[in-house]
Amino acid sequence: IQNLLHPHFAVKAMQSTDIFSVGGSLSVNAHGMDHQAGSVAGSIRSMRVILADGSVATCSPTENTDLFRHVVGGYGLFGVVLEATLDIVDNAVYRTSREIIKSDDFPKFFAEVLEPNKDIGLFYGHLSTAPGNFLEDMIVYRYDKVAEQPPADQPEIGEPGSVGLKRVIINLAKWGSLFQELKWFTEKTLEPKFESCTVARSSAMAEGEACLVTRNNPMHDSVPYLFNDQMEETDILHEYFIPRAAYVEFITEAREILRNQTLPVLNASVRIVHREDVALSYAPEPAYSLVLYINQPTDAGGNARMRALTRALIDVTIKHGGRFFLPYQLHYTAKELLASYPELPAFLAAKRQYDPTELFSSTFYRAIKALSGVA
Ligand SMILES: Cc1cc2nc3c(=O)[nH]c(=O)nc-3n(C[C@H](O)[C@H](O)[C@H](O)COP(=O)(O)OP(=O)(O)OC[C@H]3O[C@@H](n4cnc5c(N)ncnc54)[C@H](O)[C@@H]3O)c2cc1C
Image (cartoon, rainbow, N blue to C red; front, side):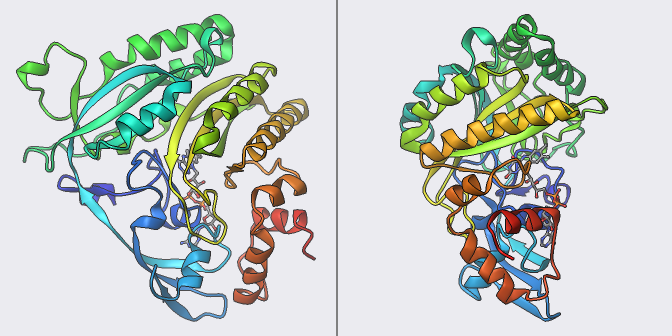
């Protein structure tokens, strides 16, 4: 879709990387770098869905709304999306910049800088994973709109740049404290110099680190640099959604949990999500989310450590009224699942109505069904 829309238009809402299918994205109600657009649910005009009985239904925010609320963020359990009509936006030109703030100041930064400034089209909050200031300092990457449309001579969306450098940086985190410090130093100082500016700089910008890109460029941050082909270790994503007022207390406690365990935290970032009105919502109220990328050995001991860590992070999330993201590992307990998603029994009852023979199933479905005690 990005290739078809480029150079004049861009996707409105999607993940922060672009390797996923449309159906897979709608079915987890994906969210990413556009903090104004929010998740994909808000960009869907309508969908055609084939149901378990073979009939095809159209649903949208105003038509067949119950089906719509169950298919979006419904993890593929209510039907197969055949077709979706999505909002798109201009492929605006952004001036990139970054600044380092204290993580605890993020809510203030959001309220005073990000939220009021409607020209900030994309944002990415990257937390330090260096032991010296673990989850304390944060690089805020900003994309400020400088033009609605790019110049006519835009190149095709190319392959993401600096893959080798990014791969080295992410791997540094696995080699101990000193290398974690080096990673943070590199992220602060070296990475900006390798940023690919896809729109020609004006002479006024030649001196600085600012760079001009079109929206499609940062939204094409594919993930080759994350590919881990090691057999004995793997990298696991986590995401926790926290009501905005509880962010600082949550980060304080999450920091302690992560410091007092041994799995290397490769990446930590903060996202903004809005209230999501779908049947099984990860954000029943506006939230910030903490996204973690954590390395583990692929043996029983590694799994046990990751399970214990996941449960500790889920518990602190629940304590602060938050929820965890369901697409990732199935390490949660029944109690944690139901405390995070009290709507789960109603969601599963609706599943039985739409799909009485359980035509649409998955490992995930069988797990959440068993955990919720449904026969
Ligand atoms: C490296 C990485 C980064 C990620 N970053 C983000 C992020 O920034 N934001 C975010 O929100 N999520 C993120 N995710 C999670 C990601 O959005 C989900 O895992 C998403 O479902 C993956 O899409 P997919 O195309 O791979 O789907 P699949 O894994 O193929 O499917 C996922 C689910 O969607 C269902 N499905 C697929 N196609 C259809 C269809 N046509 N109709 C109905 N159901 C369907 C499947 O049944 C399944 O339940 C990330 C995941 C990874 C691995």
